[in-house]
Amino acid sequence: MQDTLPPTDPTADCTAIRAHVDDVVAQEADAVTVARVEAHAARCAACRHVMAAARAYRRAMRRVGASERAPATLRERAITLMHETRDPRGPRP
Ligand SMILES: [Zn+2]
Image (cartoon, rainbow, N blue to C red; front, side):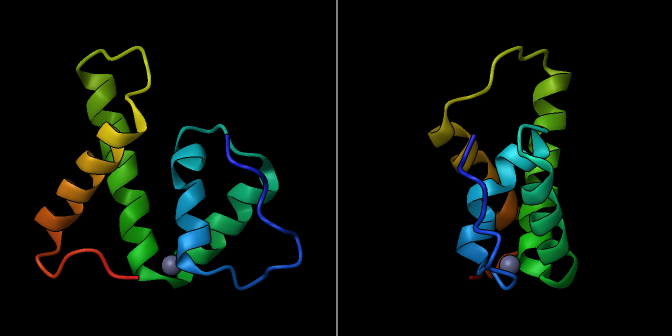
């Protein structure tokens, strides 16, 4: 799990938010981090899209019966591919 986002950073940028997306989706983040990530995603379409891709990835992994978390590089690659498939403009900051 990543460190908790700083409590004094109400406008955390997308990079900081995305560092926590996997943990939030995996329900491994603390409540403050979950609230911050979800609040950011509510007003940031790009991060909302990244969260949707991460959730889709988790659902897909559950369907194939994966019992372990995939390596970070594989997760990032899969999420990037899903993102590019949905949005031909590619990832946006
Ligand atoms: Zn964002």
